[in-house]
Image (tube, rainbow, N blue to C red; front, side, top):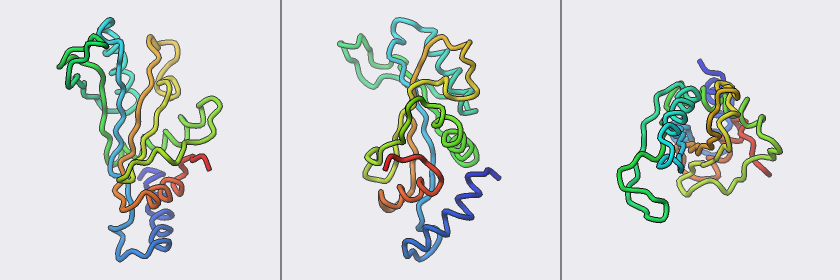
Length: 179
């Protein structure tokens, strides 16, 4: 069993049950999925950039990414409807907890001048969105083989009745928030 999943079941779950009077364990917030996406803005000029980014994303997550297409044409960006513009991965179950453990324990501490993520990045459903500036923070990526420095967006989708409970759950798991 994953270390973070075990921590959730043995420490965080009883804490949340005590803190908020729920009828059962199923009403307590839990992590449903993690979506990692990388948008490649300059893919129209350089076609091999998308292949490089997709390869890096598959190394980081351990899962093959799906390629995303533009939904509409934007003349200002020289973008046509249906062109490939990025890639994304949806992680669930065991891989999700492995990725979150790696994110909290290895990647976030490697960021330069990091003081914590803000609380205001929660949406109304209690999901948390964050960004990582470059893929070289992950231990799977060799700095020598990076052709293009690319950031990524990470969405932690939580099944939670409120934003406050989502915050308490992530804080108990060890997620670094700016207070």
